[in-house]
Picture 1 (cartoon, rainbow, N blue to C red):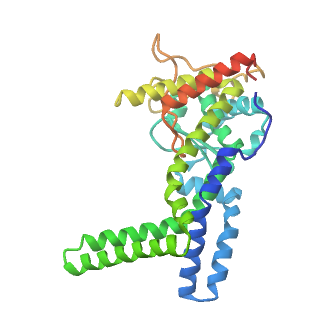
Picture 2 (picture 1 turned 90 degrees about the vertical axis):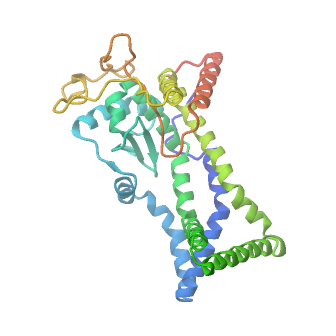
Picture 3 (picture 1 turned 45 degrees about the horizontal axis):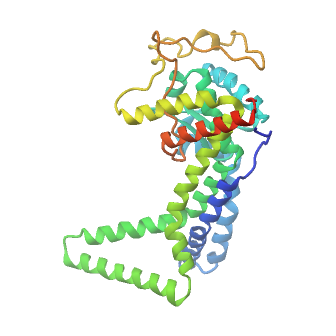
Length: 346
């Protein structure tokens, strides 16, 4: 059901790039305008340098800096690395993907979260490491691998990078307007009103007199389209994990996610954090534990309570995972279609 593809770009990723193209053009105009105000020579140099800077975010050292300083990630401890390597080997072996292509990180955040970022970063929270059993952790990692293989992560990174100047200019303008309207003196309110009228007049002339209405419409509709594309990317990553044979485990994770959303304040099922001074993982994950034979399931950590499943929790990636119930229905649909075709999991 899943081909051995190291990296590609699917329809969701390509559509994301196309949707953000108009705002990228606005970013280019903003940089050119600001550079021309400073020095006319820079009006050409700065935009070209900015266009060429996009691929640099996929350099390994740049990605490491982004993961560490912008996303709050850190390298796993030796104990965490051993467990992640055990699970990751199973996921990448089923997918036919080189396990060294991607780097595994840990996020110091609460919640049972997982993240696929940039071009080579896959991360889980330490809280997820402590609460999710290996089968569900593998399903989470398979989902994030699906984002990478489908090109969702690098497309989103490029889209965000090239939209940054336009968004920064828009936020600065909005902050200025709010500051003027909140001013206690009448002159501030008057200046805010005049600036608002100038913005409306500029948009009207730009859209209808200059005939650039399509650009204004594309920028206005862009956020709504991106939300739909995020949803589509989530469904495709879930289908990828199902195709690798992690459908039941992923279904358990999403069921726990839906339950946690329906009953706020109730902690998700799973092993409780280990007390201070005690390793957070069971002994079978130590360096001397026997490694599972390829094709055989790995050992699961013991259940913390009789009759309660060993893991579960929330799967919330950085790219705004869609509603858990909708994803759960999609996973069940894909599993049903897989069963009808008579395709056995990989």
